[in-house]
Amino acid sequence: MRRVTGIGGVFFKSKDPKALGAWYKTHLGIDVQAWGGAAFEWKNADNPEGIGTTAWNPFAQDTNYFAPGSASFMINYRVADLPGLLAVLRAEGVQVEDKVEESEFGKFGWIIDPEGNKVELWQPPAGM
Image 1 (cartoon, rainbow, N blue to C red):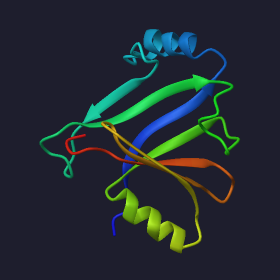
Image 2: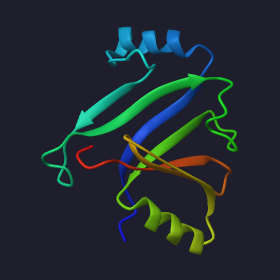
Image 3: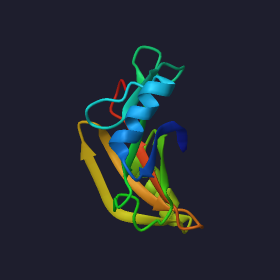
């Protein structure tokens, strides 16, 4: 079974996400959108006709989105088969969050690594 296929996103806490996003836009040219982050688009052998995306997004310092992890960041990894991978990880003894979300943006699940970091797993919809 294929597990991680790439980086889906990089999320980090910020004291002032709007100001920090503006700084990155001004100084590094990141195309920060009204929703507060940016989407880097790319193609690869797994997706030659579509456009893959990697999200970049600062979050408010007091966000609960990374909970129960206490790190100031969270990495989102792209996966090919989220339900299958979550089942394998559970069988391997990995701490898997019960919650799974599905939307037009794909399927999302979460695990906790051995150091307590929350890790987001994302199965994008076809063409992303």
